[in-house]
Image 1 (cartoon, rainbow, N blue to C red):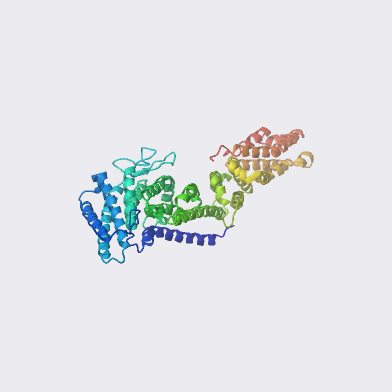
Image 2: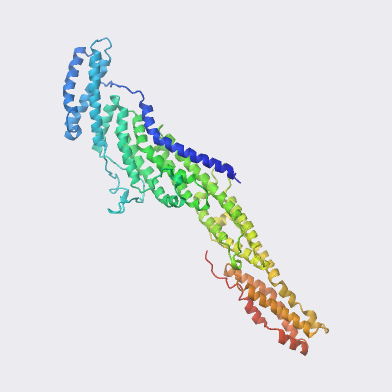
Length: 604
């Protein structure tokens, strides 16, 4: 068995770990930008057109020419890219020439006028970059959703009045969302290349990521997910979290299989002409915070308490995260996103550990369930119904066996062993509860009812039947047969003893009074049984039939034999028998088959 206290400590540590991890991911985007571009200065282009042997006079003349042409563009009140393709092309070519010229100036350390010229070129480059950033902003946002393979978006609203966005289930997740038209992507690519070449790659990534991050967050918000409260998801009541799980599972697939891959594809196209690290960083800053927030929901579920009622929601989350991992492995493989991938893997493991812990808690709850009041008529106890229906539903989940057999688990307990333990613990608890009945016979009826119910539910579930095995069924049926014998002895022992009246029939000294008392005792025992056992129940018709048949098999032959021998006795004794034998054999048989009136098809 696993250590409960140690498990609690590990899970509390997990709560702290997840909380700090996702706060760190939320803040790492700015830190990543700073670390990647820390100390960045003007990184002048060394294009193929640069000529280190150009004369200083030529360099100054070319700079004046560029200043004249570029000033008109950067000072224009109209967006260059909305003016004409020629204007934007001319602007980009001028920037290329300017960067080339600045590179040539940087190679003139012995030329006294190079420093002032370089400062002028630097100033002009910065003005160009500011204008490029403005143009970049105008193109990159605000975006519209365009489905590459489907015309409709993957989310919608309930109506104009309520405007409550909800995720719409999709049949496949091989959808690519092109949030920007191809022409815009091409323009952004051209601008990004010049900004990076000018040493302003950080600013370009920041501008791009600010718009794309807002787009990603808005897209996720439109899926209708529960936003995290100020104190985090751990403060949300389980009922609300449970209701959210199906929506979360659908939304997580849409986000990680459609939205985020589409964003990664867009980053790769926009930053295709610069080193890959720019696209990786832009993708991380755009998507990581929102993705981390989504994963934090599953982390909170994994770190909550371990009531058995949480099993099915956690299995749903476990299956969802497991299905996403193969897709996320290549998607989050770059250096920036690797930590987010690690957190998803950690959540997957935490959910598995939590599911195993839930079964420990189920065992503990069965073991601790108090024996308060006896179930009327020896009927099936509510706990028996709960446990067996719970096992049938849980074991129908193929994922459960996988979770129980995870190699990473410290104390691996295979599912068949775990289910057998639960059945044994349930039997022990039922045995304690059976002691609540003052009538020993009813104690055995209660045990028979509950074990027969367990057998029926196990037989009705292929998974539970397979896990428990034929040996378990054989042992349970043997125990029921033993309890039938114990019931006969406890309930009908006095009746059978009263039927042994041979000496009163055969011995001459037997007095009429003695015979009358003995027959009266027999009648009294029968009537007491009809009265007390009339409200006793059997779990199903099969058990009811077995009990009635077992009673009839021992009582009717003995009673019939008594009646027959009394009738064959002398006239005097025959008159006593006819006077004090209140019931015929047929009447006793009818009374026996009226027992266990509660026997009927019972709710499962």
